[in-house]
Image (tube, rainbow, N blue to C red; front, side, top):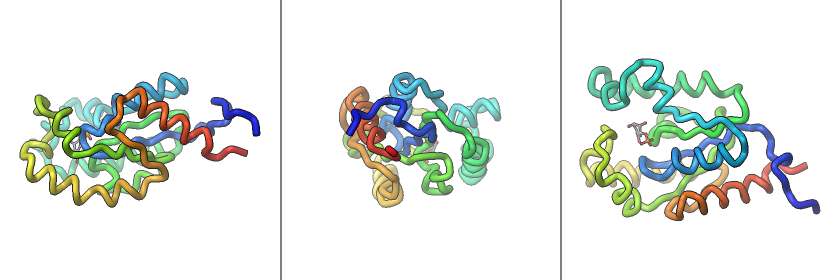
Length: 173
Ligand code: S3P
């Protein structure tokens, strides 16, 4: 069998899902640059449409309004290709992210996530550790429905390489 090369990748979007702080944006940027895909962050896209931060949207409108904007994001990009998408942590819990492309779960422990988000106050749903832990436990089974699951506790460059390896065996002729 020939060694898989980049030409074997379909141009299907790569969709990173997982809890806040699981590394979706960091790993997504690395992947996009290696594959020569465009990186897209759903939170950043929503913020630029409304000219408001996610935190402001939650406070001035509501979480359910924000989930509607995430649905708009999915509809706007489901027919695109060659994108690496970092989704907001709740996106697959409120809307089906499969139409966006191949879903990959960055499976990261709560301990690692806590450490990564220690001095970050930008996330409205990570203000209280006990509540965030409950959310984390509730969401895990939803994230596990992804096509692929990778260990998000590893260094971003290692996670990126794991994903490339998984993708090299995906949809080969
Ligand atoms: C959320 C995660 C955030 C952002 C919003 C809600 C969630 O994105 O979409 O604060 O419900 O988990 P990140 O996963 O990029 O932090």
